[in-house]
Image (cartoon, rainbow, N blue to C red; front, top):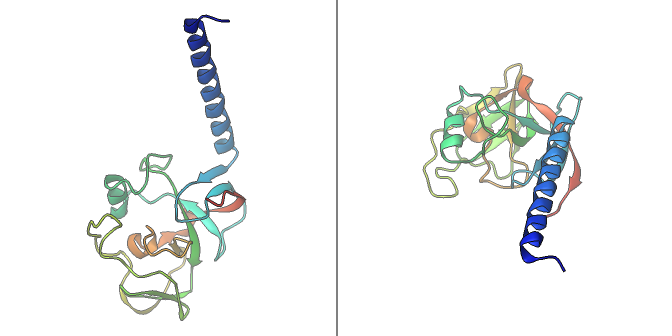
Length: 187
């Protein structure tokens, strides 16, 4: 039997090797276009970036522009962790629900797209921790047409607590990457 000190050294060495292998594997998957989602905004699982142009109904990833005031809020309140975006935050994963030419009506009570109500789209005056939310960047009005190149993204799992376009407004479609769910963890 090995002395206790030697067993501890071997166990620690094995752990370092396993962790370094996991880091290498994670970097490989990231470089190959794979992304993990463990948030409540979309199905938990493994996604792969697609070469296809995103269409309505697709899952998309994007970075919130540094110029968007909600980027600062996301960092301060830790809505998004540290990540690879130019603003230092993680990309968001949302459902693309409307784009160029679609009609939208946004009020604090709901968002409608082409006359259809979006479930769970009410703006909330406070976040899940009770902190007040700033005024939405969506214009509260009657019907308006989404301008060319812009789109509306929403949390996709029937939740009205998501951090999405009802707060940070429309997103420029050039920043969107389509992703496909390839493994759902059903947690």
